[in-house]
Every structure is written in C-alpha cells, then in structure tokens.
Length: 259
Image (cartoon, rainbow, N blue to C red; front, top):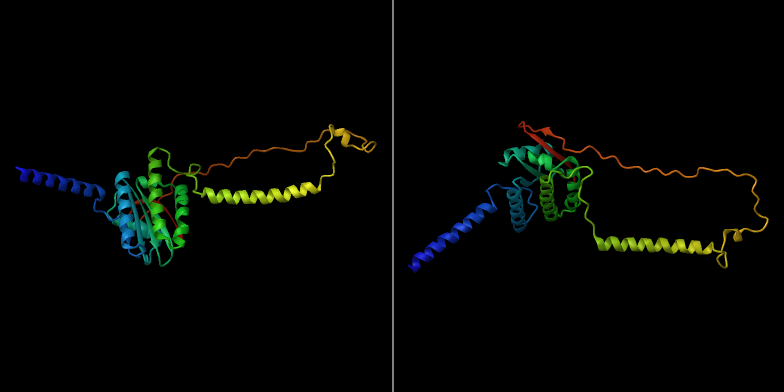
C-alpha cells in the first residue's frame, strides 16, 4: 500500500514538473546568439527571461545576433528572420549585425501598436550606449525589460508614444552632487560681484532718501511698454507607427541604426 502511495506521489510530482517546464518554455528559440556575444550562463538566463515575458504577455520578444546579414540590410534581415523563425503574429525582434555594427528592430501584429516610432526611438536610445561599449548582457537585459514595460503600457490602451514616453532614468546621488556643486560655484562668484557693488553704509527707509538733493529734474513724463510675456508650448508630434512590407509580403513596423 505504501509503495503504491509513493508511486502515485512520484507520478504527481513528475506531472507538476512537466507542466511547469511546458509553461516556462514553448519550444520557440527567442535568443539566437550566432555572433557569440554572451557566455553560456548569460545566454540561458536571457533566454529564460525572454520566454517568460513572451508567454506572459502573449507577444514574442526575440533577440538575434549575427556576424553578417549578407546582401540584405539589417532591417530586411530582421523582418525575414521574424517571418521565418516560427514566431507568433504579434511580436518584436532585435537584430544585431556585428560586421556592419548595425541594429534593427522589427515589429509585427500587436507589436506595431505597442512599439510606436517615438517609443522605439526612446527604447533604442537606452541600449545604444551599452551596445557601443560591448556591454551586451546589460543591453539585452535592458531591452527585454523595456519591452515588457512597453507591452504592459500598451495594454492600458495608451501605448508609449510622442508626448507620452517614460521618464529617462537618472542617478539621483550623482545628479544631486553635480547640481549642488554648480549652484555653489555660481552663487559664490555672484555674491562676490554684488558685494563689490555695495556702497551704502546702511539701508534707507524711503527711496527718495537715496536721491541727492537737486540732482533729479523731470522734464517729461510718459508710459513706456517695456516687457511682453509670451507663453509657448511645444506642439506634440504626430504619433503612431510607420509600417512597411517585408519580402514575404507581411506588414512590419520597426527602426534601425548603428552602434
């Protein structure tokens, strides 16, 4: 009897493990490192993160690195890779071309909605510097995290777009120290300048006491318009995503650039 119970418990435990494995990955390869930019452990961690985000968000988030795109541009290669990689209708793919030091992002389906032109400009700005410095783990992890944030924002019905972008990250301590130092230097020199211009021994009770007797004579009086205040507000740029057609005839959005 005990043997049968232990057998049933073992089967149950194995079933749970298999279910968790199936939920953790659906067999789709979302990180292809042909340029060998990450170590094996870094690659495993990134693949797991991309799988988790993709399955939870129901939108494929993919990163592909290659040594060369051949006679195709990075954008064309990214589109074709997404179309032929077995990915879902909805997704986003980041391609890295090491030979030409180019990057390209291809969006598909709901990915076109979630990643607008302005949103892609913001997103790629966050990863260009790490890529230029060869900090690939940092760049790819940042890309995955930002994609998760962008998709979540799009689900609210208001995707990140022109006039509605996340605030750029900053380091509070460094920013505060720099601001404090600059403010101190400016204040020091300005106070010294003002100090040299002070000739009064003590403050006067009324303005007329500062006027030397017989030195002021008014010959004409009139009102002059000296200042005008104009408030200008920056006009929001048109938002949304521009699209194009890949070689397979599918519609994609995206962006590309150098690092």
